[in-house]
Image 1 (tube, rainbow, N blue to C red):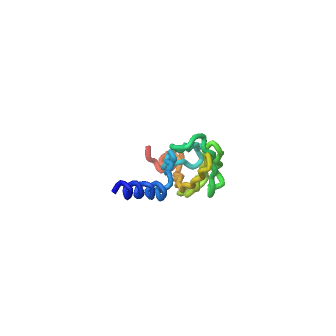
Image 2: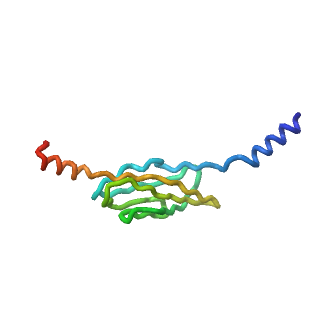
Image 3: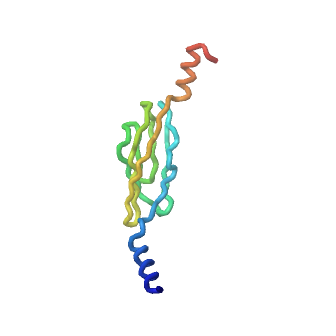
Length: 116
C-alpha cells in the first residue's frame, strides 16, 4: 500500500503541470487617441524578467524592463504578444490593449454639437 502511494506521488511530481506565472496587469488600462500612454508590466513568480513585445501597433514601443508606451493614433483593440524570460524560463502571454477616442475629442464634438 505504502509503495503504491509513493509511486503515485512520484508520478504526480513528474507529470505535474509547469509553473504558471501571473502577468500584471492582466488587462492593460485603456489608451486614448492622441494622449501619452504608458503601462509597466510585472510578473509574479519571476525575479527581474526581461520582456519582449510582438505585434505592437507602430505608435507603441516596448522596452525590456516591461514598459510599454506611446501616443495612440487609431481607435481599436490590439492583440499583442508579451514575452518574458528569466533563469531559463520563457513565457508568452497574449494581451489586448484597447484604444478609445480621447476625452478631449469627445468634449470637442459635444461642444460643437451644442451639448454643454
